[in-house]
Length: 137
Image 1 (tube, rainbow, N blue to C red):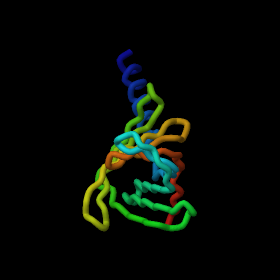
Image 2 (spheres, rainbow, N blue to C red):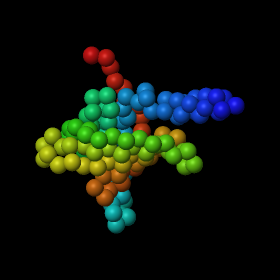
Image 3 (cartoon, rainbow, N blue to C red):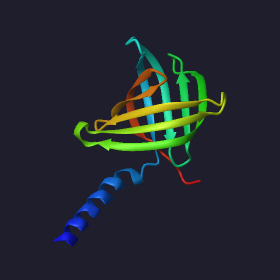
Image 4 (cartoon, rainbow, N blue to C red):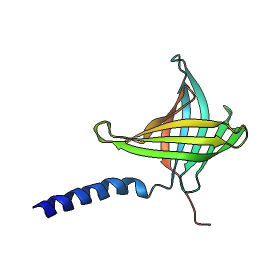
């Protein structure tokens, strides 16, 4: 009986862990954000988080979808957990800026529907998540 219970626990833990072992990265498109004061505004921003390469790319576009700004960060710390009761995955990432040398904290919440948000420096960016397409080089 003890062996059976141990086997069931091991299989359950392996299944839970396997949800996250194949994640190569995520892409996020935000079309609006909220500030700490609750003010909402539109935006046109893309985030690409590559966990394999440990790189974050943040692309800001104008209202006409023209290039405005792009920044690269090195992911220095990464944690992920799945919260079953609210059906969401939460990533916590610390990223080092390639320009300023400052470290920024990102809290990424992805609901099972594919919608979610990215919290950064007091702002909450709202939008949709996609699988980051990676290619063998």
